[in-house]
Image 1 (spheres, rainbow, N blue to C red):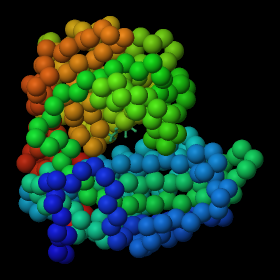
Image 2 (cartoon, rainbow, N blue to C red):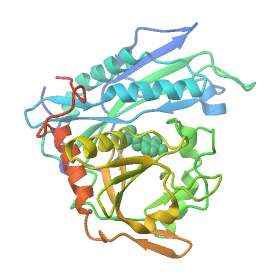
Image 3 (spheres, rainbow, N blue to C red):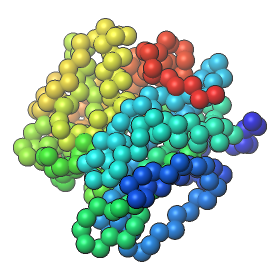
Image 4 (cartoon, rainbow, N blue to C red):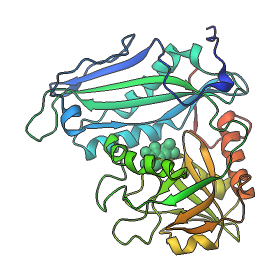
Length: 341
Ligand SMILES: *Cc1c(COP(=O)(O)O)cnc(C)c1O
């Protein structure tokens, strides 16, 4: 299929409406067969569960073109199972995991003109989500749901190199102990908007959230997990029941251990330890890894030795190895890359 004439390298991270998306509806206890449709709009009753009690969850993954010209996705089975976990936590019906992967494939195939070419740095961002659709006024789960998947081409995350970020420790909390921090739900983002807007206003790129109970341990940012590298080159990643289990972070841990022969520690990380680390980064589907140069807490600065000009050396190796696996230059672990066409 012909590609759209888009300036791939200069696309931002924004929504561009494409012609096709996938929709399946849940009613009377069952999902319908689902289909590709051209209607980008959703018409719902004013009292739909999603509007009243925020019953909505989502996922995010990418399709892209490898060096040998295949269109692939990266570990979509993990997005399928994470959406199922999110659904169970919000009393929503699970969209079957095999059907999730099939839906992703259908949408990408229907939008191949929008899959950026290899080497452009751009990717096709895929957004699966689900919401309660029937009227709900007494507080309870909806009875009817819609699962949708749309795609939008997005540009290279770092134009002109990855500049290290400056992060502040937020005065707000992201997720309560035993709450919903571990699921990918819109509600976790709604409450983070005020914190991120005020962080930006104060000149910071992101917020670091600490554990709300003791405010001594590192959790994550609003939409990315942390990775740290110690002076003796161990990879350390924070562990907590209220951190969203990032697929990128889990993949980086595997790459560090199996490809780079690093020691990997997934454990509680105290804020007081940060000053002893060599490198820091944020990880998630959008950027893969963004280097962190500085963390600020009430005017006190922690500056990582890797500095404010470029990614730390070990972070760069992790980034190059993981993106090499994704792009097909480096052999991938079994099952990581799923060829769509
Ligand atoms: C989506 C998300 C991440 C990143 O997860 P990936 O699977 O790597 O994209 C991290 N933290 C939060 C809160 C998220 O919503």
